[in-house]
Image (cartoon, rainbow, N blue to C red):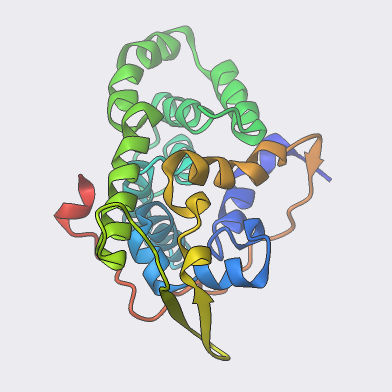
Length: 246
């Protein structure tokens, strides 16, 4: 067993892999959230997957770009990865102050794993570094904190749902969704695909928070990070146009 404070980066990467498939309650949910259409409409998960893929390839500069884009849409695991990369100097010049600030941001919703890492980082900062963190930290929150990032994500979700359903109020009606899978196409009812837990930002955040609120109690043995690739579903681009950045 390894202390949780030493397992954060590995666990963050492992949790990012499917994406968030561990949180799906049933096979239908799993098919929905791994589909290209769903990821196209959810930039937080799309950019997190892009960051993970780049990280595994050793393209840390690209990984940082992708994680920061996901962070703009309130993705706390991506914010935690940005923190780790700054703290350790992975793909960027090491900056312990920015590492702390980003981990503080990742801990904004009270995830135990992030809280432990945040306190560890703070204890290791010098007095001068702490003063700098307090000075420049608010600017990071102004761009990436939940107060603005959740609304940025909410706009994306509202727009995507309206475009697909063709209704300003997002009425689903008798809509059916065909999802390509490795085993063939899966048809899901529109009411399942457009469940509010996926499209109302507050419910969506709570749904994503579920596993992270309980992860990290005590110690965690995460084993080794697997070096397998995690490609995006067919049809999902990860080239991040300017419109996706607000």
